[in-house]
Length: 63
Image 1: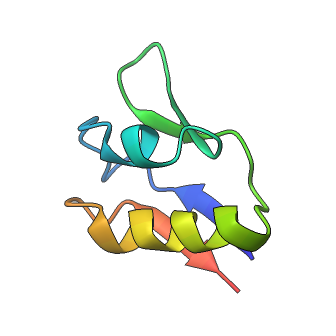
Image 2 (image 1 turned 45 degrees about the horizontal axis):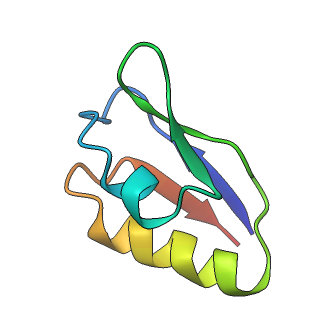
């Protein structure tokens, strides 16, 4: 699994970071960024949940 963020869609709401700070962080520009691109186990599941809950659909999960 690979996690990426489409910066052109990200609104900087920080929900992903709030839910999974082990995988996501907030950049200086106020947008989310991925800090663990290939999470495993429980973190992978949490990253998928964050993608499902992203209001901007900016989180991309590739299997």
